[in-house]
Length: 198
Image (cartoon, rainbow, N blue to C red; front, top):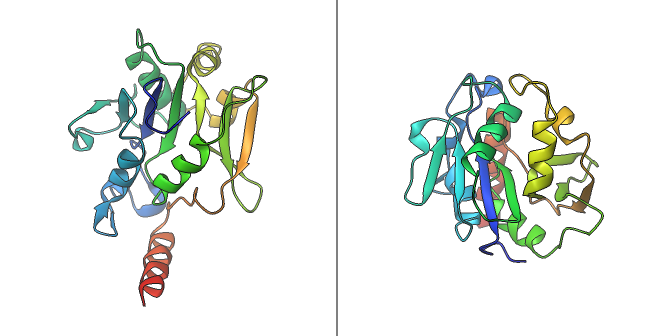
């Protein structure tokens, strides 16, 4: 399994309100000269199809943009919209990634080297504090579909409810699943990059 395997699709979630960032367009925040979401798109560029869930501003060559119903309905509604867009697509697995992963290329390379165990439904990153990063992983598409279909509704539903029936194989992220969901986190990341280049 590689990041560019044709048997893998990719879902990138970028439609949230970014309430911890004053409702800024988090996906378009520029880091290292590139919009945050483009770091994620680059990490999965070999996948097909690539589904981005969020506003039309996410449109790029090779990226299909869909919107959750209702807009801002939360990550599970966004995943459901992406799964609908994957109807009829012949892939076995799909990446499921948030748009705010500046180290997405390292993350995808790390997890691409790990096959989903026979008794598991996904490989996901787990951070140094032991937190599972559900939006930093690769899932069996059929398992994700079953989990979504089992929910009575998807709008406003927690990710915990979606993944509850799934067996997840957690992999130490080695810092690659860092997500930037506040302005202070973004500034800390920028400063760390400056220090790195000094």
